[in-house]
Image (tube, rainbow over all chains, first blue to last red; front, side):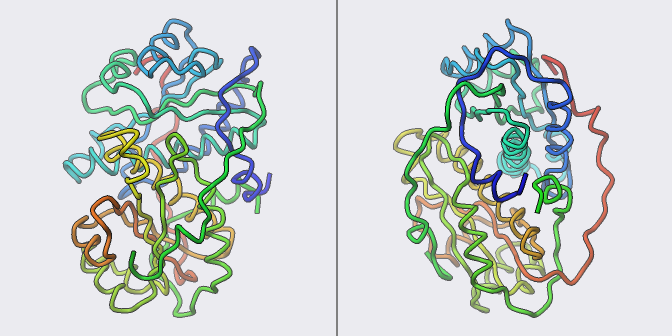
Length: 173
Length: 173
């Protein structure tokens, strides 16, 4: 699929069919997410594939009861292993680059889902400590996003955006 | 260009030709970056186009003297206007979602540059206060990335990645 079409077609899809997502599709999604850029090529991002029903329910409870996490046949948790970035970048590595790098990989996942005919929803609203406990993350690994994925059972929602002209500035704010 | 090819071809390009980047290309880049997702569709991301030589030098000085900021014919500064997200999300809006949303838009810029035959480099290593001063950002606007853009004058660097298998976990870390 054309890059431009993928960008324009992407939308948060929160309802999914019961149908499982094929492992090959998940592998293709990860193959591309793996190509995400990272600060100083420190490659902090790792992926936790969650299919277990109990684990999904626990993530749902850790994430303000967002139904898509319960309904999705698979969740990809995108986490940043700051043990690869903090030694070089300290606090900025942990608090800033780890988030940017996780977001980069997450967006590729969202885009690749479009290409693969899947629906996906990025969830960033969660309690870090609860998610870390569910996923058994060591203290140097930071959860960045929980991406619910499945075959779509709803149309893409339509929203009106702020007009682009209002968001562009020349040289200064 | 195919989405997959764009993802695979993208690399940080830090040397550029003197040739200016056409306004139509910048417009097409922004048209797609505008489509980036954002937390709760709060749309905090705005863009500052920097072509002014003095401003570019000041950004270069605020960003650890990374030469690509001086050399690029244009820099797109991606900023998050937290006045649209903080009222709803408070601290997490300012410290987390604003960064994720800025990274989403930034990655679309990097990808669209590939499609447009341009080279780009995302710079996240800078002193926030200095950048804010150069760009005259109000205190509710947070700089997320400085993206140097130009026609490439170097080949894409090749790096060896950590093998993907090592980055994938099942259900828990």
